[in-house]
Image 1 (cartoon, rainbow, N blue to C red):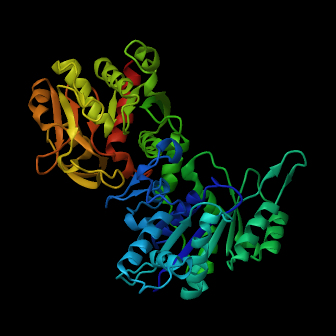
Image 2: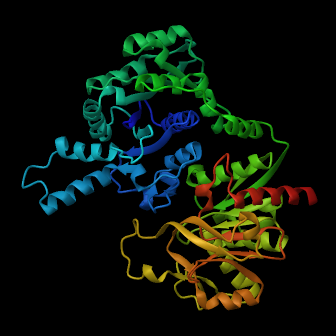
Image 3: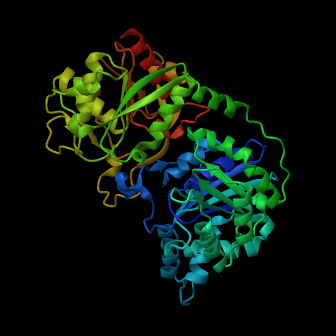
Length: 536
């Protein structure tokens, strides 16, 4: 069977939830037994988001094979429960970079390099999916940005050409658009949607389905009007109303027959779905029996999307424990030893996430110390683990100026050092230790008990590591180095045996957590927080 393609575009305004619509469709198709893969095309000229400010762009999501990608890929993985790869996120920067490299090599034979056909051919080459097996595969491809933006035009032209090449039955387009409600006249307005579709039609593209984002239900008259002006059947106009919980979105879109219409357009069978595990997960999410508050002490808290995978992983940990996890957002720049108690006394767990640079570091260290000394359940991630080492070296081992050389190159106790293979690296983009790496856990450790395995694999994104010269001193003073790389070169996890729950990892475990398969560390943190609440 040929691969079937579903393109998802957005119109009128950004932030309509194209990614969630695409991910929901992926979930619905997977529940029907189809093999699904997903891809995001971003119109920005950066090669990838790896060098972008988290407060502006949000989280950098890392795949197993070490690609730094857009945060939407996190939603894709969480919804379809599949690991994506470096081919799953393509930017304008990557496309032009590839074309320019070919031009420098002389691959174009001295011809003039143009947007059409050279850029569009490069884009189309990244659409194509070839699989060895005979199973029907559905590739869902989201195009970032908004129809009408100059940046998106090469992608849309590529879709037009691609549909012509593979046949419209094999490549359909879903357009996500806004239906605003005017309070003054108490009316839903379809004109923005009409204008957005007209922009598409002007480029030779006709949407097969229109998904309407609205705060109010669409009656049949509205759907008929959109269908009339946009040249689609009325039953291909679907509403996408706000839901209380993100993971309700696939079930809401099932009621709108999103998958059925998509299968109809693709000339595919649409068997009955199996939502058993997803429905149970949503029920547990909607009907918790308890709640806890966990402090997230970070330096990018102005934009919650900077920690979106952490937030979702905490939510997953809550679902499996039938508990609502309330996050207390704390700017690490505001935390001191003097005010730590007033900021943290009302929480049942503390999490220190990843990050780069010296801003807010001392506040994170204060929060870690508070968790250690007050026996508050604690989880440190990436930078959070490095600062766990720093805090312990300072206040337990007695190395008072201990630090990471990232923040203090002059420290006499560099307990966190630059990784040897990072020496001399000048470019900051795509040069970190990226992707999945194995780790061996000590059998008598909390980590081993949580994972239920001696060997694990987690995704990483870092340039610094625990300085092995200090391993012995840390261990002698009671810090258990519970996770080590198989070659014994890198400390991957640490914990305290005399603490109810105190564990840190160099990895980013949040990237592998799923709503129906919560990550063991987050499941454990929430369970420990519930116990702490019960006992306090």
